[in-house]
Length: 201
Image: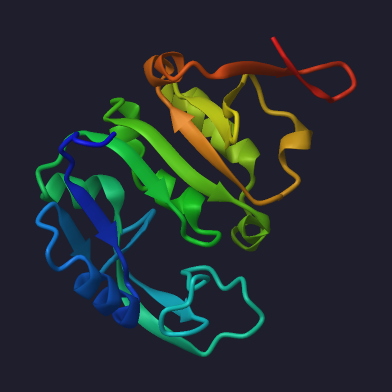
């Protein structure tokens, strides 16, 4: 919300994109940019560049044409933010072109202790390249006591359970939310009916 103080951390492993973002936010004292990719492990990994500042650059090769592959530093989110002495995240936004679930897994210790209020992530056909689906998100949510929701123009739809209809790999923004945040945001409770149709509770 406007006027609410916030500290923002941006992760960008592409050297060219990192330079662009650093220049853009040079005057913003509340924004820190880190030359690292978040994942489910610490170390290094191959990062596939479609173009130096391409929007589909990723740790997962999902595009048919890759201009260059570079080695980048990777870290789990929980370890990375622990090193920064940050113990709570209000909003974690993930858009990693098919690597989203691995990023979420890297925050497992923080999720287990409800140290993240909301995780927003992008789901689409690129998840197929990493062998992941929304079913895995629902399993993770059950494990850590979170709700799964879909964001749309009318607000937030809260799912009571997973259904195969969820996994059509259409591009959309989804959320993992603590029950408290889900309630506070007034999400619409939805369930799958006998004919595999989504309906309000």
